Length: 386
Picture 1 (cartoon, rainbow, N blue to C red):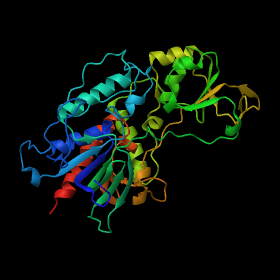
Picture 2: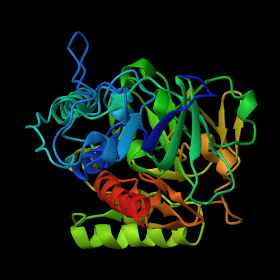
Picture 3: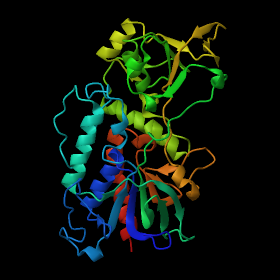
Picture 4: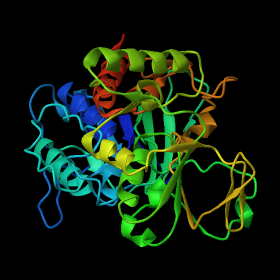
């Protein structure tokens, strides 16, 4: 396959995390078949299913085709990179993938191991058409026809597709804020995406910056082995009650309203607040959740507080979130004056051939599953209309 001779496909999915697998399931359920020549149901050392086999229904030549491109070496999406101390008992919820019952969960198992195994079994059981590792570099329009094809260029060659479902998530794009004096700080700085274990911070004072779930979970862990300080821009909002379905719908609606106006999406957590758990109450009792207002600047040996004093700090852990990994879509010029991408559900308002799942209101696990179904239903209607 070369750039001058791209492989043809009807729907291309980029990313095989929760949202991408959901989209693949619904594409297959609606009768789409793997793109010509693609191997399906393959594990290392296993025989592949016949890519030309017909699974019933319309003859293969009369059916739409699909393919998932995933940048990872194996199944699991971003979950395979989570720190090992993030156990299933403390993970912030994981929704079942569609069509297959979630296996029994051991609360003590690292989420990276459980979810990687779960996704792997899911891909094999459903014989989804996934090619990896493939790094998508650029998506562009092949011509000015609004019903024409999109060109997808990657590390494995190029594809020409009639429609695109982008499910690249955020993990590969951690957000590092710029802060006064940052270059002068002589201690260690790392992002949550680089966190491995609390033990590596023993006997060091760690400043955790950020007001989300990752921040408080890591404050809990790190404060059990060393001293910590917690900094946020705003006072955190805590919930004593469980986060029920009604609250979830309200939160998603608020994020959805922003992206419909073309504004950058807020995280769902920024709307829902933080939920008290037994572990976090214990962390609060240790003094680990005593929030400080954001420091004024960083100095070589620490940070300057709002009262002008300097707090000695050895490590700054930036728990400042992630941004949508959409750089490969830049040639499509999807962003508007508001800085975000105007959306109608999962569809890009100005480019109906492109759907974003795992973006904005569908960035949660439950939202990702629903978004996969919605995107597929919309695209099948688009591609089969007279």
